[in-house]
Length: 228
Image (cartoon, rainbow, N blue to C red):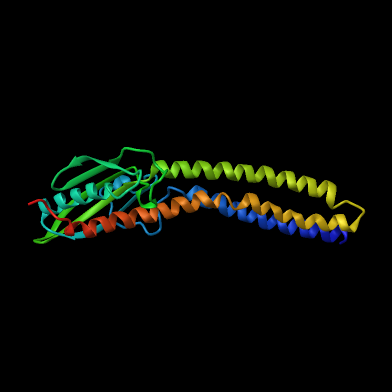
């Protein structure tokens, strides 16, 4: 391989690596921003641009008082099925329920329970149907995953610079073609480019799973058996 070709290969690999790094940075900075599938409804307009807040609407059968009671029981029963994720009810009424996590955030928890606080506003829409507007607070997990991803991105920059300097000073200028062929080892930067996508994926999956978990909880609350 000629020196000129070695420089071309080196530049191509580093360019692709730089683009991947920029994509990871853009996705990292989007952690906690309003999601594209965010519902139009917001219980309070001031929450519209709040960091790492997800909201939505679901419906369940029952009148206001019965629906609220069943939803509370569904929340309490769900605690018995979760490992390391327990919620306490901090506010309870016929039209509003609020729960809060009382244990560590991530360890031994299902992705659907990554939120640390949730609020449910109940509104009767018909004789036997209640609309539940929920708001999930994912700020703690969002800040943690963003911080981890930014640290990994900073590490990736350092490693890419070190590899770039070593390849540019020791490999490409070499008089031996066999050594110049080692320029393809620049692709090893992939090992520091993929880790930032891991916390990004954890948050994204956790955010979607949290909404699914809450909506399933609301949808199945009507089947919760009430005490005699």
